[in-house]
Amino acid sequence: MTAAVAPALRSSTSRPLIMGVVNVTPDSFSDGGRWFEPSAAIEHGNLLLEQGADLLDVGGESTRPGAGRPSEEEELARVIGVVRALADQGAQVSVDTMRSRVAAEALEAGAQLINDVSGGLADPQMAPLVASAGVPFVAMHWRAHSAQMDLEARYADVLAEVIAELEQRVAGLLAAGVGREAIILDPGFGFSKDAGHNWALLAGLEQVVALGHPVLVGTSRKRFLGRLDLTAGPDAEPTPPTERDAATAATSLLAAQAGAWAVRVHDVPSTRDALSVWDNVRAAGGARA
Image 1 (cartoon, one colour):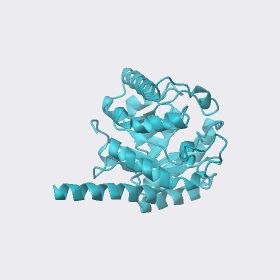
Image 2 (cartoon, one colour):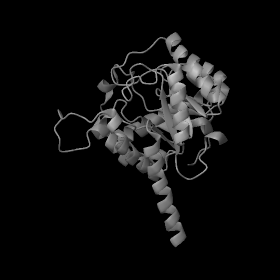
Image 3 (cartoon, one colour):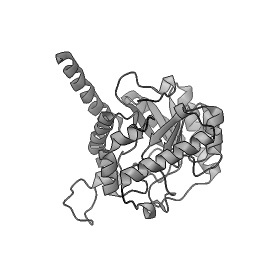
């Protein structure tokens, strides 16, 4: 990695950090709203930490394709208490939100990082907030809200266009006063991208890392991992999201090899084990040399 993040959010090893997902939503594609109640979300967050998560990403708005948006007040009600409880227990917490007010209140409650899937495009006040707070900020490649994002999955060269649009987003954030060292990039797997786009991005992930910012990879349980048989027809039934964790772990390993800063996952043990295999193989290779 060529850019710095807050010391608490740096890996103590050369492997990527593991960001555990805490969805406080009734309609998440990945878990069907199992952690919607605050007490359940807090319990789940603690379990992810016990399983090896380095930080937790708490979100109150579903970004599955076609999802509608909750009101700001509803999102605040879902998120802030969970962020505060987990942070008070010593967890490193990220808030997954596109709203500056939610981000601001989450920071006050103890969050240390803002993860905005719109990269600050959905709320013009987000970049000024990040600039004044001086916190790490994940800017994802984004073209539209969930209800319209599949209509924007049009590319002549997905890797080149995603990189160009991320560079434009970095320029906009810098112009708004956000420090270069605060910016973390996310290529946005599954957002305005079909399966072919996602595979191409994964194959070219090193080029995203080469932009010089820490990179967050969020492939976990995404639709393209539910259709691994490339010979199957377009009407083939995908595997359920909860049966995509082995494939997610494989993408976590590929992300590590490409130099990613962190991987955002729903199932921590499978990714933890995959990254441990990678660490052990590299250690053995170093010892042999």
